[in-house]
Length: 110
Image (cartoon, rainbow, N blue to C red):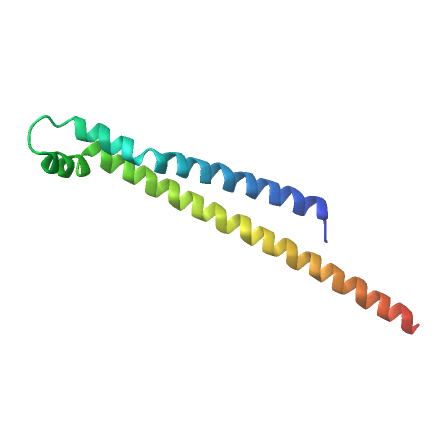
């Protein structure tokens, strides 16, 4: 049964989840350079190039990249769910419109 209220709630739920996960991913992504800089300062010896290579391979930076990947996946899955829910809502609305048109056509024949 077509229920605009249920569709609205589904869109709000999936949309909110999508927004939350996108914000979490973006916050992590925005901090990537700072995390790399923090890792860089842990190394006292060597040239800047050597320190950067060590920072890129550091546990701190690799853990951040792992968290970023997890957040990116969650964000993308939430995006798929939201846009799929939106597409389903559009399809249901079209289906209901078609049914109304059919009923008007049938009632005109009687």
